[in-house]
Length: 121
Image (cartoon, rainbow, N blue to C red):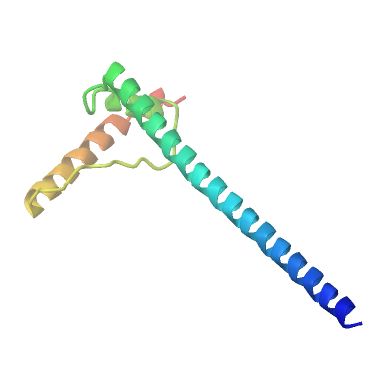
């Protein structure tokens, strides 16, 4: 009877060790997969950045404000009644320069959005 109890304890102990080993294997596998997913994300971001740089170097942007007047006239001509948002770079400008830049942008938008009543479709 004592031998049977000892055998049961040994069997239970082996099963516990096997379960612990299996959990450890699962944890290490999960850790390896997380690490691989992090590496894949890093490489995806790197490839996207390089593609963006290649496209940006191949396509030169229009000078600022070049087509803004045409877009605003088109909006006004089509009877657009929504909001128009203007982004103005004011970093490094004094208070007076900032106010002037905003006023010039506002006047530009108002001028090109104004259309005679007969031209609205």
